[in-house]
View: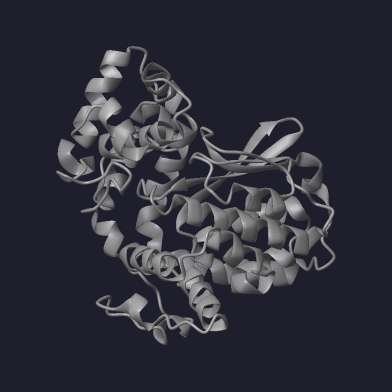
Length: 358
């Protein structure tokens, strides 16, 4: 793919997706769970959501079909229209906090019947796309006492990031408390975007310290909870539900290697990992990794550049680091080299991008 693959269209906002022309935006592979929750919320308020689907070859009725899948472009458009129509601060918090383990369907069953909370977290994170998540999610060990659920915009999407993080983290907390009880309280939640006008609502929902303008989007919990046994543990049911989840994900096998490479790169950007190092970590030869990526229509350099560009925009929006520090976070020892690379990726210098996303 050419160097312009991650460029922002002329006149576009840096806060918009870096991948406006990425063909993956139009692949209908996302369960419309979030859209269902939004339309149900509108119905409870006596508002019609029919207009949200105009021009999308999709209807309000169709998203209730469990076999229907939507594209990221369709989901993003509906959510954007819903936010505008409902005009309610903290809409993601309202949607997420009322979701239950049943909202996750088979994935919820697989989590509920896991041995302990740690296994349930692992199952949920590894299969998060089954639930219709519009963010990429990963698990991280922060230190000996702390673990975290981390999230990244899938296509560098920052305009919807507050809603998506609100929905993801509030629903994750609601489901975690359903599994282990109301005593579970996060240690802290960190968000890469500036504090919104309704920031006080976050403290009410999460009941913990909330840090805005952070480097990552993540919710941190005490690692001791990982061993908490679940009363619904049933190994046979858990395996059966998990197998069905895997079948639902089976249609996206070609992208599994791409997702693995993206996750690994995100976690090691400061180290500036090379193709050989990534292949070794994934237990593949360099040649095999190149062939697998080519089979998905991707090349390593394009993936690496996109991940770095998206991370750079997140950090620019957070506004906590200097340009040189952001470059260092992405593995650049020379700030000038980072500036040149960023301009190649996006068509503008970092300072220009910072003003646009501010």
